[in-house]
Length: 308
Image (cartoon, rainbow, N blue to C red):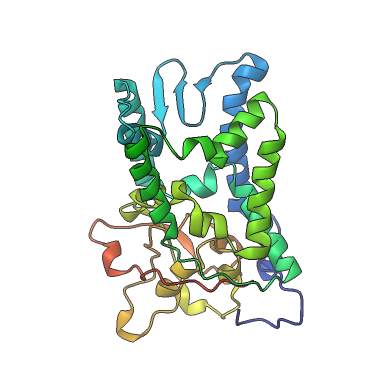
């Protein structure tokens, strides 16, 4: 990574903390943790405290006895496995899908998914240890896994991803107790991201993130480098971004390829960390107008050489 002295500790966001204070430099990170804890807390209130605001689990639930919510990826797996869902399943999936169409598909990954704190912690430790291991995993590999789960579901008549889905495993562990297998799954993801591949699980393997990137193609809520002329090449945004390849087209365009400062790649998770850590206020959330097509702006995925 260019832009800093590798012989010295690298603390992305240190300038933002000095400029704006700790809370301001971590506002979206804190909001995401509150959101993740709040979602899990709503599900746990019933079995642990007898307060049934939400019944069910993160895959399929009923809120306040009338609002069905269904993970659309799970619904899709069920259809491919030839298990036709009830009408409420389609209604619940439509509600969830419309929500993520509006706020950014992969906002699920950064604002809801309980695995996100694990991968964030691994990314932090990787920077602190200055791990420089590389991986040649293609970022599109997650889409191949996504497709494979559906093809195998059709061939076997079973939902192939849910039995091994870490999100489902963690949720089950929180409700019924964290079994050894649950801790081993979390440890494996943590070690993989720390020592083998930077953001390897979310950025290269997870089919859930791959699925939620699809509604991100048209989502209006985007991060934009609205003050990109202020950029001082500190590289803090690249260091904390779970998908750093999405930043370059908006922040550092090349000649005639300049299509504007908005990050329109569907792989952006709308986590807001680039906004937090930038001491120059380069980034902000903005609304994309209907004519802003991602096909004109998205940089094609390439084989990734990942380092700290």
